Image (spheres, rainbow, N blue to C red):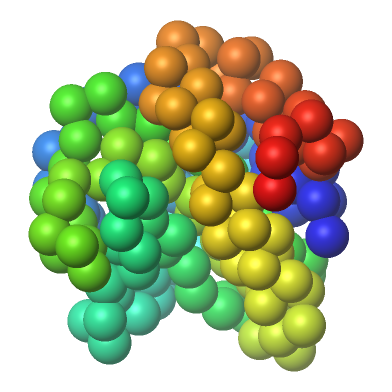
Length: 158
C-alpha cells in the first residue's frame, strides 16, 4: 500500500497550531472534514473514537512521530492525512519526546487489512531519517504531498 492509496492531499497541513493531543487530533481531522473526506455530522464521533484509541495507549511511536487512528463506520474506505507541527506537541509518546509528524488514519471497521497495511507503510517509511527530516522541514502542503509521492516511488532508503 502506498501513501497515494489513502492520504487525502487536500487535507494535509504543514503548520499545525494546536498544542495539545486533542487539539491536534481535532485540527488534523478538521482538515479531512474541510476536504470532504469525512461527513460533518460524523466529525465529533470520529474525534471521540480517536481519543478513545489514545486512552488505550499513545499512538506517539517515538522519534517525533504519532499515528493517531481509528476504525469508524462513517467511512467506506481508508482515509488519512498528514500534519506537521514545527513546535512539537506533547503526545505522551513512548520515548517522552514531543511529536512533530502526525499521520491520521480512519478506516471502515470491516476493512482491517487496509488499516494494517497503511500502518505498516507509514512505520516503514518513518524509519528513514532523511524522509522524516524532510517532512519536518516542509513548509507547504504541496511539499509534503511531493515527499509522500517520492516515498511511494521508493526514492528514500527504506
